[in-house]
Length: 213
Length: 213
DNA sequence: GTCGACATGTTAATAAAATCACATCAAAAA
DNA sequence: TTTTTGATGTGATTTTATTAACATGTCGAC
Image 1 (cartoon, rainbow over the protein chains, first blue to last red):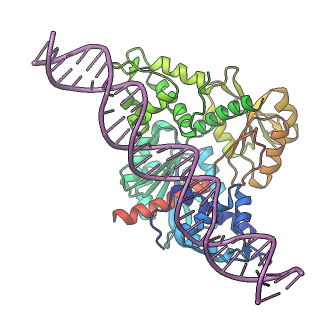
Image 2: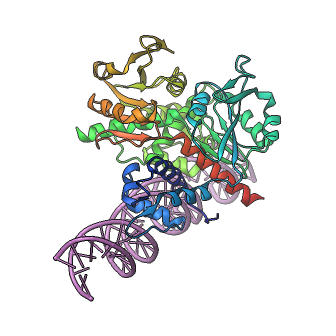
């Protein structure tokens, strides 16, 4: 399914719509209104309708949107038909958090491998995911056709890991390290830094506080 | 220090500038050019200059920006003069990751407490941070004047935790749960969902792949 | 039947963020 | 001195994202 140039924010929200819809889907409730979706995610109904417009989905004027149909359509758009395989590099607390959190979420994404350098972790299975030594990374990535890598190693090591992932043919990287990475244009890179988020919250909390005082 | 209405994105970058600058600060290197900062963070020099303009900082036309001065100025803007105290609710893998990650980062933010319900964790210290039972939360938050809460509990419990934090007088919340929260306007709320991020990477990786094929 | 209530779908307007384009200036080089 | 180089600072523009406004359509009530 092709929709040209879906905005980044819309893609994020589609993922959230789907999850919210999966939660409320039931025998009794087969349809949902834009304002209901909006309320669940604390956004406006217009935003929801606009997003659905962008993916070309039409609801029923009186009943709202068919939940099941909508879930399926979102899947057709954001999932890859053949599924995508994911690996976590760095099985520290954050890597583990990701894996546990991921587990059980049904999805076209499957968590295939973890990598670390700690001998105690290597060749063991964490939450269903086997852990290998980092120098097996290229081999395992290629063999299993893993296309997405999540980097949760200490930041100094992030650049070499990224390079190794790219050389192994990865298509997308999610970097949780504060070290900004350099990747070629054909690899999609998303970065998230927890400390920055915290400082942002601190800043706006302070500001809010002054404003409401 | 007051600058009216700094854009969200600028605040995020200021946090990153500061960290990058702290890394390169040394006796030999006292000044930095906008294009150097830009290169470190993979953004454009104009973006950097624009951000610095917004906080009213002027560089030297020939030498660039005084690193030390800039670090200090950013501190004056994004830090709270009296410091802010932070607590993590939920000492699972993610909560631990946050604490370890946070440790040692010098800053006006101090991690004061963790909360959990697991008896094995309660009344023990993790990475310098004491862990209490969740029903002590209001008490500890108030006593220690904690103004920022990070939520890393399982998502079902997130709403009640958020409510409890708000009632205890928290000023900002960072929610790592996929459950969108409801808080009054005087509390700043930032939400981040790892699964959504991953799905986003998956989507754009797929798209990129098609485009470059 | 027709009217009112209430959703959807979409164009237009606005706001937020990033980028372009260039005036300006200081120092080194000619 | 004068010119060239290479940086900053910022108005103007473009791009991205959100919100407003409203035309349209369907069902139930009367």
